[in-house]
Image 1 (cartoon, helix red, strand yellow):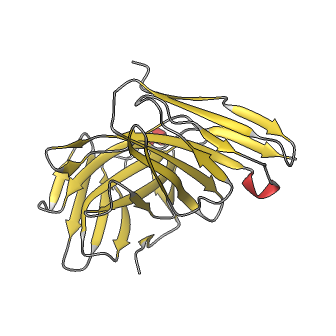
Image 2 (spheres, helix red, strand yellow):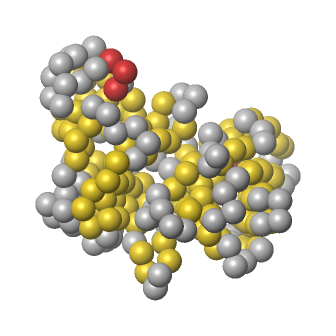
Amino acid sequence: GESVGLHLPTLSVQEGDNSIINCAYSNSASDYFIWYKQESGKGPQFIIDIRSNMDKRQGQRVTVLLNKTVKHLSLQIAATQPGDSAVYFCAENIGNQGGKLIFGQGTELSVKP
Amino acid sequence: DAGITQSPRYKITETGRQVTLMCHQTWSHSYMFWYRQDLGHGLRLIYYSAAADITDKGEVPDGYVVSRSKTENFPLTLESATRSQTSVYFCASSEFLAGAQETQYFGPGTRLLVL
């Protein structure tokens, strides 16, 4: 079936370390992937996206890697800061389903000072 | 910029009452979406709209009604609220450009409590 899942529900890292959040997806027709950050009491905030014709995309302190062979997506955060503490969701867009996103359950990132 | 706004931000109502949650976006995005977020379920799509006067069901549409008479507004109505509809509701919008879906941007959410 269609699903987007996360390997780890919680992740605790030391400030300054790099963080890696993983996500698995099951639909090979998915052509667009997005990472969102959600802080407590707020709506999901766009972090970075990647299309299926790419393997890697970099932003400011964040990198998304896409491995279509094993249907795996990861978000890397460099030099993690306390302000990065939040829940991170991956989402996939299946190309023929009119813009709908399928969201994973989320990973809570906790940054220890 | 205003982006996407939701009102009210907090709402308490009683079982059986009708409630309307408002969503307004200033980007003229074609697509708009309503999600609910509950512990243990993540974000679940209720309804979405590809353009004015075009709406379609998502994963959990029962008990909800939507309309889209104008591109910028996408109200969600709970016709007869139930306790199970206590949740945080998020509206989102996105565009479809050059044959590709673009990112969905979310509003701040409405926290609804049904007593």
